[in-house]
Image 1 (tube, rainbow, N blue to C red):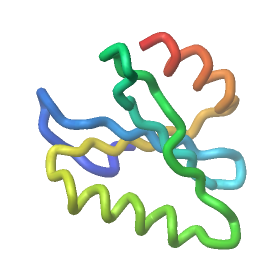
Image 2 (cartoon, rainbow, N blue to C red; image 1 turned 45 degrees about the vertical axis):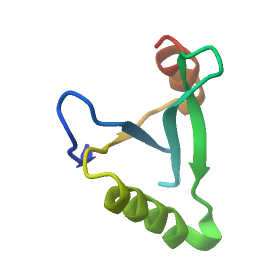
Image 3 (spheres, helix red, strand yellow; image 1 turned 45 degrees about the horizontal axis):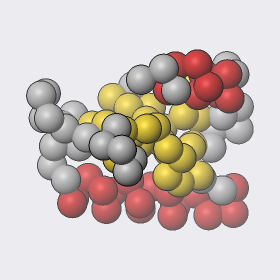
Image 4 (cartoon, rainbow, N blue to C red; image 1 turned 180 degrees about the vertical axis):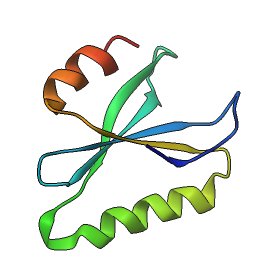
Length: 88
């Protein structure tokens, strides 16, 4: 599900992967020293404070109107991360 639509050509993409308990893990392509971009874990939602994760996403939305946030429910999150996100 697309939670936030940003600029079609240049917006930053954040991916929220939900686990079986409905907790989110946030990934973003961040610049590396060699100039490439790598998907990196940015934030994980915790059971005790789910609001903090949502607040973080809200802050990012307000800071960057071109931001895309995509939420995925994946059966095997670790496998998805290793194959799909590391391939880009």
